[in-house]
Image 1 (tube, helix red, strand yellow):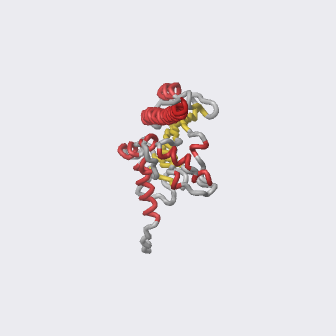
Image 2 (tube, one colour; image 1 turned 90 degrees about the vertical axis):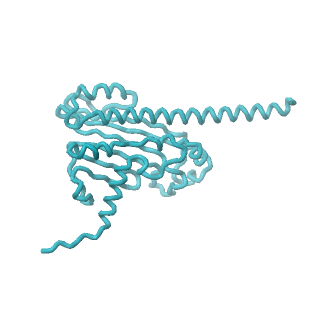
Image 3 (cartoon, one colour; image 1 turned 120 degrees about the vertical axis):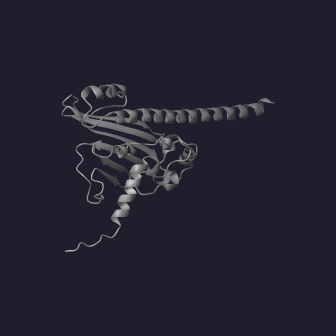
Length: 249
């Protein structure tokens, strides 16, 4: 092979190696975030609302100090602690819901299984016990589903929390669920429940799935992240559209 031919070939090989190295790095980071998210969820599940003591939250605070911290003072009298594990693609690969959503770079990143992802968690400690605990997962939606609206948020965000301060169902929530409720908007889904809820239901409302972080095809529904929250949302929506039987006097 002549030097004239070997030069472009070597350059192409170098570009390909750099490409696969970059892809492998981001892919590995996504798997690492998934692993950490699973461990973080285990820690949240281990807390018992209205029972876990100050000594119970100390190991969790030490373990996740790199990714979190309290908002304000944190003492055995009161502590509001939040943990954020985030991985964001470079802007030219992540894209935005405007003309860049039509760009070929975000689409290629998506087809390669790359996406911005995050896991969030936290708890509130007061009056000698954990009063609230919560966990959330966030993943980018498929690029082709993005809206060009300036107010559109191109990701799925699901959060589930247990709290003894739960104030009961909202006005649109079926009365058959006095210990849990769900709020679903265009940008997020939030489910709340009490320690008095059935144990199996409490477990289902913390049964987050993490395949959306690492699978090749992006997820398009909250159903793939927290099925029970999505099911509740569908039930609530169907109930709100069901004609009510007039009460007799």
